[in-house]
Amino acid sequence: MSDSQERNILIAGASGIVGRAAFEHFATAPGWNVFGVSRRPPDLQVGTHVPLDLLDAEACRRMLADLPAITHIVYAALQEKPGLVEGWFDPEQMETNRRMLENLLLGAELGGDLVHVSLLQGTKAYGAHVGRMRVPGREREARHPHDNFYWLQEDLLRERSAAGGYDLTVWRPPVIYGHAFNAPMNPIAPLVTFAAIAKHEGRPLCWPGGRTGPVDAMDARLLARALEWSATEDAAKNEVFNISNGDVFVWENVWETIAASLGMEVGVPEPCRLAEVMPTKVGVWDEIVERYGLRAPDLMSFVGDSFVYADLHLGLGREHPASPNMMSTIKLRQAGFDGCIDSEDMLVEWIEWMQRENLIPPV
Image (cartoon, rainbow, N blue to C red; front, side, top):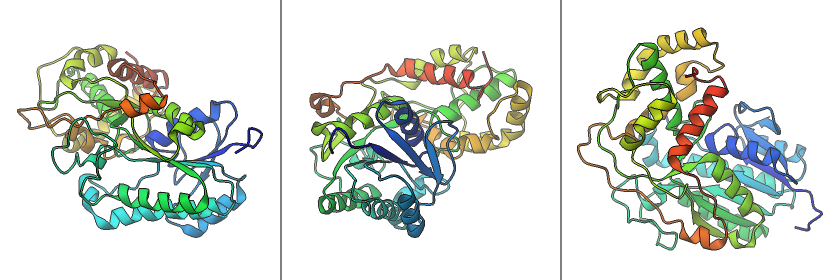
């Protein structure tokens, strides 16, 4: 596209962790007009949000016809089934996620102005959810032989982009940390609500999991910066990139830091399944919201299936660390994006942000 052409970016899945961060980032980045689509609006006062069900092909076509010509897309939309894990192996869910992307692309291509699409994947691309992955995962590896909607979406996007004359970038982050209400895969929300409830009940912050090992992480804000980089840089065209914060951490090793940021002492470990225990605490959370005048919603609308997700990552029932799921980010750094953040600092920053935003109680 020419330097004078208007850049209109559409964020699909604007109410999710990645989509919300991207929506906020592009809304304040010079030279961009940002539009967000999702079934429910993000809790933001920036950009233009349009309610949209991506499974409705006609609604996608009408919506895109009414917007200024879209030049860029960040596709961060995702449909997960209740309970989370079972859906990862469900062919019906895989097809649903493929069709959502197809409906959006078919509508966006009608304007003929599309320049670039970013697509989100993750460590499941390396088979991390079906067995021990090769460490570090590298983009040059052959596709891991398992069914995954990642492959359905990527094949569709490569076919459509080749025919339509626009570029793509595929992103593979590890676990993403940020903020979005009712996100199915966000470790931050279950962590802070678990802690707030324990503190309200007069208990210390006890480790609820088992043994974990080194993990890498992805701050949603840093990922948003990378999404802007890929939308404009030739080095990102039609490439697949792993991306992470750039370091590793162990949950047990940062637990004391997390407790301190919440104004709590660390107690002795008390293993428990958050997905079972926390739904019984909805009344306690309501008391906390009322006492502190929080703008947070009810507990399950805040956290959703992320309690299930947290149980997976905190190692409940494990006496030995799980197989590592780390990826190499050398390719991305060599291509020119060198953003990074200390993951322990990231955890504290998000906790402090939620305190300032009146989502969780102050220290």
